[in-house]
Amino acid sequence: MSDISAGRQIRIAHRDALDGDTAQTPGLIRDVAFDARNPDAAHLSAFLSTVKPGAVTGAHHHGDQETVLYVISGTSRFRWGDRLEHVAEAGPGDFVFVPSYVVHQEINASTEVETVWAVVRSGVDPVVVNLPELDAYIERAAIEYIAPQ
Image (cartoon, rainbow, N blue to C red; front, side):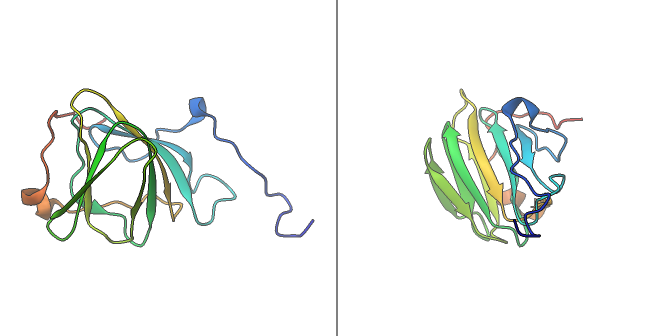
């Protein structure tokens, strides 16, 4: 055994132990599996995102972190670009890659069912840079949700 692996271990985050004690967005719930609180984490974080029907995020980016989403259920719409001029949709089984610093918005394309993603990000700290100056370009929520307290 090398000194590098001494004391380090495989960790399992069971679904019922995911931690919602992180920044939340109205209509989007993040349940963290691994982040900076994982003592062995140096480069990655992982969480489950549940997006309520008709919910959207505002325009934002994640700084120098890259993000990979895997759509578990529902239909997700993504808008990106300086004025959110590009659009694509992803469904169950699809992977979505969001490069660092790319301005984007996430939308649940359905007003009836939640969409759920498994998310892995290339950093252990949650970085979200909100860009309210782009509110004129965002897709509006079909259903409004109140911010968690």
